[in-house]
Image (cartoon, rainbow, N blue to C red; front, side, top):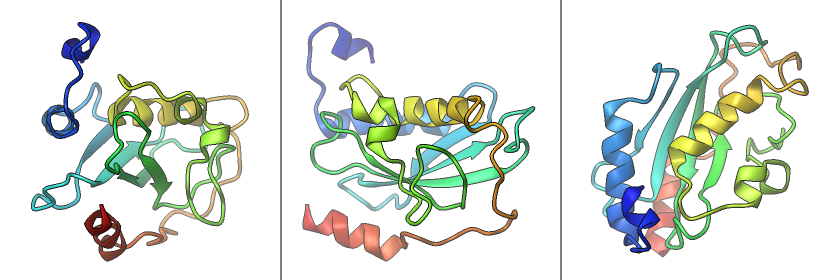
Length: 159
């Protein structure tokens, strides 16, 4: 974000509005997208991301749904990221679908200028990494509603 590069700290909601606008316009080749779960969420906490698996991997053609939760400290702290679609990746907890910050360097070494788009693009790139590109995957259609909409709304209301 250009305004942050100049030393000006953009307030959380302005930053999220910028990300929403960018997400609605579409990203790159269309294999990654994101947007808000609920347009009425004034705190802009709950987001949904989609990644279409990269070519020449076991993920090719698969559509992965993710939830991103931006609490009151975003963008100073990273969002919580959880795969709704079951996936086998070295940085994803198989029980919960959570992307483990300690196993995913972007979250572990979070910087304020990183965005949800950066997270999704980096996860897509990670799918192509040697340790993930050939991992056996759960059958398609084995989506798991690990974090229901109401759970996210309750978490957001606590903020």
